[in-house]
Image 1 (tube, rainbow, N blue to C red):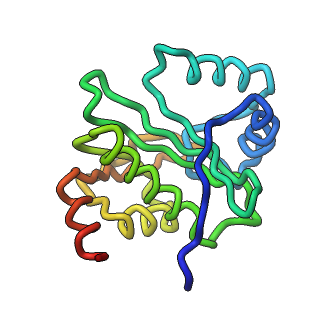
Image 2: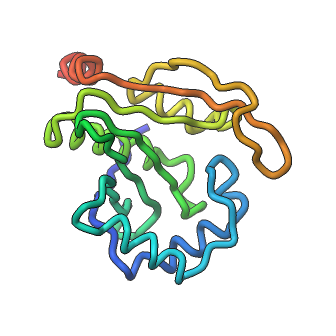
Length: 177
């Protein structure tokens, strides 16, 4: 399969109706900590927070073929050298096409090359096999499991903790050359 191509761009207020639609879809939010309902007003408040000059979050809209299909973010820790990662491909017609993997690879490049990060980490529900496969493909290592850590729709879920260090990412880049 050819590698998917995406473009990461700053989110804009015009993207917010897409987020409202996606975040109110139980299938899209199945493996997220988002609990609806999501409103345009709520998304506007979120947008103001994450685009404020003092925000520790870098958010990007994900575009594929000129179409807005999702969102991803790095949430910086106080040190500025460690960040958490989050992603959602909200457009279900674009699932399984490699766009999440392509977006994550670009975020890692930005994080390690441009932002000087030392580590990127994430958590994922243990049942999110598609997401876990993507993270491992991009070089994340499983660091542990928090058992029955999150109550989602009346069921306790295990959460997988993963991370990638700068030197692991750099070694991956060298092996591609």
